[in-house]
Amino acid sequence: MMLKIKRVPTVVSNYQKEEAEGSTRRNDGCGKNCLRECCIQGAKLPLYAFKRVNNIGSGMNVLENENKGPPVAFLDSLLLGEWEDRMQRGLFRYDVTACETKVIPGEYGFIAQLNEGRHLKKRPTEFRVDKVLQPFDGNKFNFTKVGQEEVLFQFEASEDGEVQFFPDAAIDTENSPTVVAINVSPIEYGHVLLIPRILECLPQRIDHESFLLALYMAAEAGNPYFRLGYNSLGAFATINHLHFQAYYLAVPFPIEKAATKKITTLKDGVVISELLNYPVRGLVFEGGNTVQDFANTVSDACIRLQEKNIPYNVLISDCGKRIFLLPQCYAEKQALGEVSLELLDTQVNPAVWEISGHMVLKRRKDYEEASEENACRLLVEVSLSDERFQEVNALIFEAISSGNNGDVVQHLPEEPDVEAQSPEEVDTINRSSHQSVVAGAPECLVLQ
Figure 1 (spheres, rainbow, N blue to C red):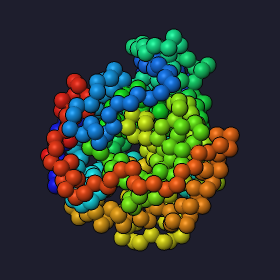
Figure 2: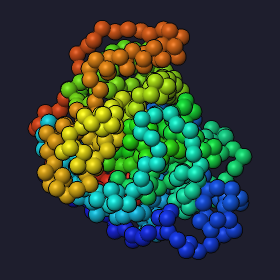
Figure 3: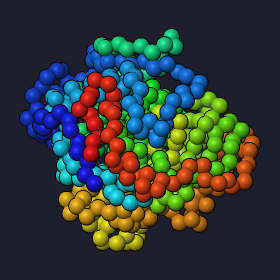
Figure 4: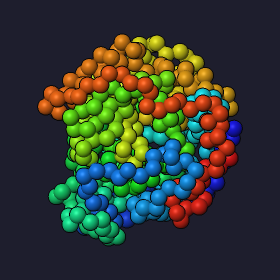
């Protein structure tokens, strides 16, 4: 079943290509108006100051919100308004609004997108894929090299505990700011990057402070159709500079509809469950006595995976109330020659969005022949075996137990918490027309 995406057309240009020669000097410095010392002195950008909260609100999740308009939030409007502005200014490498999208018939309701531009114009990976932890290399591409016009706003905690917006705030180079920037090779509408403490040039690895920032952004957006994702090195991150990705998609991801089975409840109130009947094995985290507790628990798990050189992906869902942790082994299988040529020919790199069920396809042939069987064939190769998954879980729970002072409230396995969706229910999703992602952007619809 075909979905049509009706949006304002993009004025496409090659402006953002780093390799472009003969760039006109606009300011003192290197002439690229970048975020390095040569250009950043005296620069100003909008600043969104968020309110630190102890608990993430208990609004509707993405399934409950399916046939209703999402809540209106200022951050939502700001992000999309600035993103639309960059689209009209031609700062993207291709027109993502022209990409065809459809829901694949079947039990899971995988979403397929044909995105030939991302394949042709995305920056290549510049580092080893067999090491999850690698040092930052300033000689390779990193986000300090982007033009300041790619940055939408700074994102920092409010000093007085209230949400504030400053349209023209100086960049504090002494205290490296966190920024939100466009992804110039977008997958979907509103595709942005959250780059914690950008001037510190942190490598792509999770730490407690940065992960908490990602949760605050999800909560502050207040929109269940806005998800954040993280790819470790070895799990198809392509830039070794700490960042999260985020975009809007006005349908549930298949992974969000998957059944789960509770494993345990921690002392800090975090509930950990296991995905059931989904092609990729993974853990689901929910709850927590505070946002800090929730962020620390998931961060502890991610940090342990990094230390053990286990590639993984993270999906932050339901406005920060649910987090999916997905260790994977696809790149390892590629290196060992264990992936079929048929899958390799698709050139699909299964990162967080693909694993969550949004299949970004690079060839029209694969898009036209997209089926649930083909999607599952790819994801099965991504997933750890059951034996290895249990070994990895043991490492994760060891790390989490240490963070909870060794106190874990154990539960016997329970019945699945969420019923898997039937084909009839998936078809209902396909038939439904969703409200706009945010008020003021009525063209941003995914309609039948």
